[in-house]
Image (cartoon, rainbow, N blue to C red):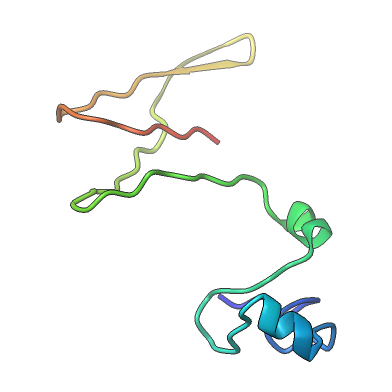
Length: 89
């Protein structure tokens, strides 16, 4: 995915000095700059995880057990011992 709005790789907002200062690389690499206002308007949540070699990523879809008075109650069972990161959005 490449952002194509303001501050994208080919945006006319970049000056030669800013390109150098920010180490801008123009490439279809999924890396891009974006104004905070554009980010907040488009992004709902951000998850930041501590990556380690050998890390396995998985996700569990919510399996709803009960819905009482607007509260969603669910459980997660882990089948491996170790450090785990849980993100809820």
